[in-house]
Image (tube, rainbow, N blue to C red):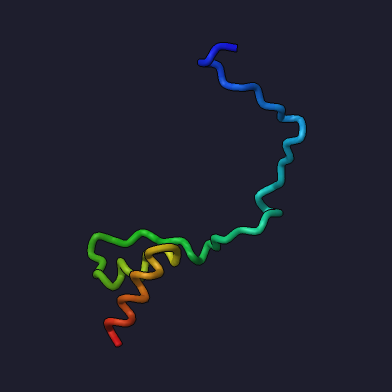
Length: 66
């Protein structure tokens, strides 16, 4: 085998699971949604996904408003 060839991989023990049967950390309700061109900053923030940094941005907004 030359140094440019990738090593061979044995796929005999590879398993497949349907996505519907696997647990997921992401729920449809957590996804973001598009906003229109006339959206306010509040609309835009509310449309961000409820994940990762967007969740923290929303918490920061809420803390500032209080």
